[in-house]
Image (cartoon, rainbow, N blue to C red; front, top):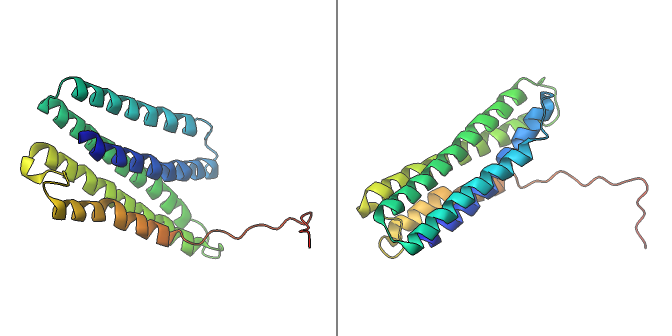
Length: 188
């Protein structure tokens, strides 16, 4: 059951940290900083996190130990905290960089609102996840097991996954228009 609780959280972490990577690349390119190693760093960090988590799962499969369960939950909490810091760091930097652009910049206000809102939502989401997972690790009455506390579990997943995902999708719903090339001629 322990694996079932951690795998969606790790996938959620990986998906949302792609947004942090995107913002980091934008920030580094705008500041003329080297951005070529950001993707390698991102993949190495994600690989290390999955490797450590798989080692914890294997150890639990071989020897079910309550101390290792707590260590695994604290690990997930630390991963969530690092994601929250990533959103705060690069989302905050991008937000303040956008604030310095001239007021006449096209789309400045919209992008400023998008980055600020998504940063606040994702930072809060991962911070709440961190605190709840730590609480459930040390307080057995606050378990995240669906069978033990279905109402608390519903509230937890609504606060840290469903609602933030819906808000982020709503905020980022409008994609830029497709560019039409002068050489593109559709067949009629």
